[in-house]
Each structure stands twice: as structure tokens, then as C-alpha cells.
Length: 91
Image 1 (cartoon, one colour):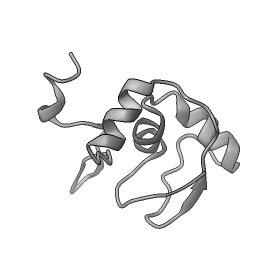
Image 2: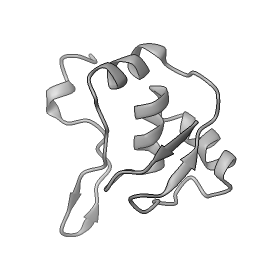
Image 3: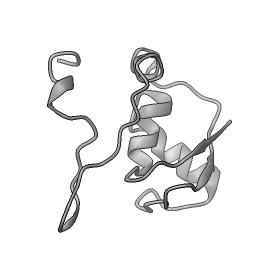
Image 4: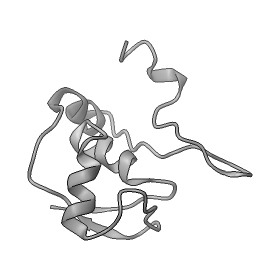
């Protein structure tokens, strides 16, 4: 399976979107021969491992068309995968 990176997405964002857990970013980085801290450019195509980490979150993202992206401001990146609207859903 392949995934095309969207604007603002980090490996952690893709890991949550595709596997329901940021822990999947280790496997994504390894499968693609890149560092976990690398921020891929929008449009980059990455190979995804064939593993499941958190099926509930994975299904939620897929069923609700959620594509997490790290929030950015003028100073660069801030780590925030989901906004306030998800606070109640994932307590």
C-alpha cells in the first residue's frame, strides 16, 4: 500500500491517519529508508507497512475522512495532530 503525503503532514500524522497510532511512524520510516524526524514534502509517495496498531482509530480516520496535519504558524511547525474538536471523542 502507498500513501501520498498531504501538505503539512509529518510521519506521525500519516501514522495516525493510516494506522491509528503514532507508533507506526517507526515502521513507515524504516520501510521507506528515511529518518523518523524527516518531514516529507507534499506529494511524496511513501510505502506503508502491512500492520495494524489501533484499528478503532484507524477506522475513525478512514470513515470520517480525517487527514491529520501538524499545525503550522509563522515560526514553523507545532506538534498538534488533532484540534480541540476531538477532545471529547478521544477522552
